[in-house]
Image (cartoon, rainbow, N blue to C red; front, side, top):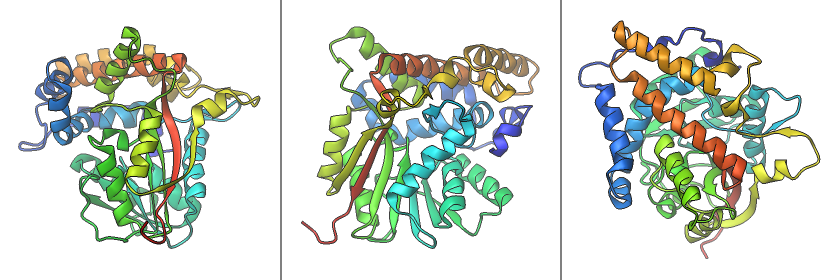
Length: 353
């Protein structure tokens, strides 16, 4: 269980931003972020991707840790499996398919606060470099690593994953878990991963995308897609077919493509939908936090804390952005038009083609 799961009082939500800190004015940052989706064009949003994504994670990282865990991703769950077991299994699958072994040097593309990296180190004993462009998340990740005794196995580099500051052929493999959906240019992002991993090694990832059931001519489908993009700080989501094509354009040999969500749903083995934590599970205090009732409570709590001047003004606006995300993700999941878990294994050829 992650450290975040044990927090009863959301101490980090009371965090006062330092003068000069990025997005120190929480209310203004939330308004700017929302304006990028309600007023700006797609081209303008893509041009401001780095700023937009940093605004988003400066606003929501503490809420993610409080209401979810240190592993910022979804996972389908087998009946009888706990939430945390499903999260870890989802990560272990990638590590196994990537062939990560002890002493390998692996790069985590978009590492968040390091939750998946810590689990993968526990499983494989590999060394991981996390790529992140958000200062606050890197600070949190290092703190969690120190608490887990993993500071010597994991390090972090602040860099844009579309333009990474590594030499060619540096790493023994790479993975990304629901992170490259933030890239404004996926071909460029995947090409950078291709450049920094060694010939013969694998890039394994879970990508967010729209499925074949998504109909761009359906106004309701388009609305849900847009609200997911707004609520999760995404420039634009592509289809599964587009994602695979982008991977090939980057130079990779695509070896496996599986919509893990569809695989679970079509299996006779009983499972729980990936979006279930967003719609209602009251089996634990932690579970309640991510439900509709829990999210309403968190919003009210934030408003009270703001009124008492215990939380930064505008904190509740972040909860409203996340509420839009949660509602739309659950609808997209029920309709089958969206998947957070398009699994791809792509290999860098031993020789240039």
